[in-house]
Length: 450
Image (cartoon, rainbow, N blue to C red; front, side):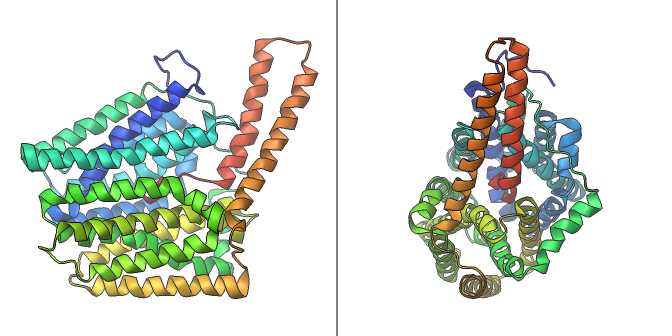
C-alpha cells in the first residue's frame, strides 16, 4: 500500500500520523466499551467475553498474517473489524453483535502485532523510546478524549444511543482514513524455522517451569480487573455519569503508564509488584461499599485505583519476564498473554451471571493468591533483587545498541570512499533489522490487554 505523503518512514511526521490514527480509534473504542454492559446487560458481557477469548487465540497466528500482508494493511484491516463492532451498537441485532465481537477478537491480534512491528520498523536505536512514548501517549489520550466527548453528548447534547454510536463510528472511520497516509515500511516479522505446531508447543512448554505457573495468577487478575471496571462496576453507575468516571480512569492510567517505569528504576521490581497488587486489593475492598446511588467520587476513587494498579502490573510484566526467563523472552511473552486474555474472557462470561459481591470476593481471593505466589517466587525460587529486574532490560538493550554501533562503524570504514546512496540505504536497512529482531524478541506492545 502506497502513501500520498512524500516523507521517509522514519520521519517524526509519519509517527505523528500513525499516532493520530490510533488516537481517534481509541476515542471510539473506549467510549463504546465503557457503555456496552450498561446498555446491553448480559449481551454486553457475552460480547466482551467472546472478544477476549478470540483475542487470546488469535495471537498465535497473527504474526503469520502480518508477515504475509504487511504491517500497514494489517493495521487498517484490524481497525476495520473494531469499527464493525462499534457500528453494530447503533442498532443492536444480537447475532450481528456477537459475530462482530468474534471478528473484533481476530482483528485485535492482527492489529496489535502489526502496530508494534511497524513502530519498530519506523524507528532507530536512538529514538525507539521517544517514538513509543508518542504513540502510547496519543493512544491513552484517546481514552480520555472519548470519555470527555461522551460526557458532552450524553449530558449536554442529550443525544440518543443511535446517534451516540453513529458519531463514534464516524470518528473510528476517520482514524482508519488517517492510517492510509502513513508510509509503508519493509519491516517484517522474522521468519521462523519452526512450524505453527512447533511454535505452539514451545510456548506451552514454558508451563513446565514452576515460576511460570506461579505468575499465572498475576496475569489472570489483571485481566479480571478489566471485567470489574468495564462490567460490574459500570452497572452501578448512571449511564450519563459513566464518561465522567472514565475520565478519572483515563487520567490515572496515562499518568501511571508514564511513571511506573521510573518507579521500578528507583524502588525496584518487587516494590511495584507487591505495591500494585495491594492497591488493587484496596480497590476491590472499597468496591464492596460502592452501590447504585453512591456519590460519584467514590466510583472515581475506585476506578483511579484500578487504573494505577493495572498500569503498574502491565509495566512490570516485561521486566518480570526477562528476570525469570532471560533466554526465552518471546515464548514466555506469548505464554503469559494467553492466560490473561483467556481469563478476561472467562471473567466476562461468568460476570454476566454474578451479581452482588460474589465476583469481588472471588477476585479478592485471587489477589491474595497472587501475593502468595510472588512471595514464593521471591523467597524460594529466584529473588526479585529489587532494582535488577527493570535494570536488566536497560543493560541488555545497551549491549545490543553497542553491537549495532560497532556494526555501523565497521561498515562506515569499509565504505569510506564509496558515497553510493543505494549502498548506504542497504546498510541502514540491515542495521535496522538487527535492532528490530532484538526489539521484537525482547518486548511487545501493552495494548494486547485492551
